[in-house]
Image (cartoon, rainbow, N blue to C red; front, side, top):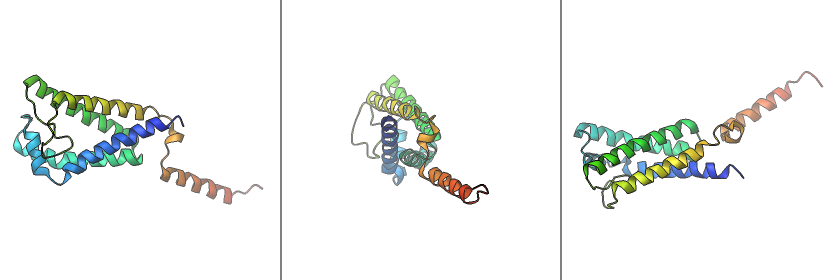
Length: 163
């Protein structure tokens, strides 16, 4: 019961990252245009980032949803959020008001960069909440680890020499 909130927050962050990456995964050209609107990188770098970043977001999202490599995926999600915050704050400092491109490639929904910063801070908070119980190893075993442990116990019991 006490582990439901951290698990829920981990899965929620995973769903957000999975959705954000999946929306942009197959439209790298439009997403690279969204990246170019930030005026931080050159077009070739924007195209590379637009090709790689959605795949990383989908992978991190899946890892968080299914509880695989939890600590690493939480760290990567927080690092991505920090990079997004830095890019959005550069827009605030320079007075540029564009759509962040977080959940779409079209740029149809105009939200302020500060709103995007708030979303990323919220995601970091949820990630930190998910991190709180990663130290409790036995409560966070994945399905595969539990099966492997059960197999190990069964094999050691069947080969016992003592009555």
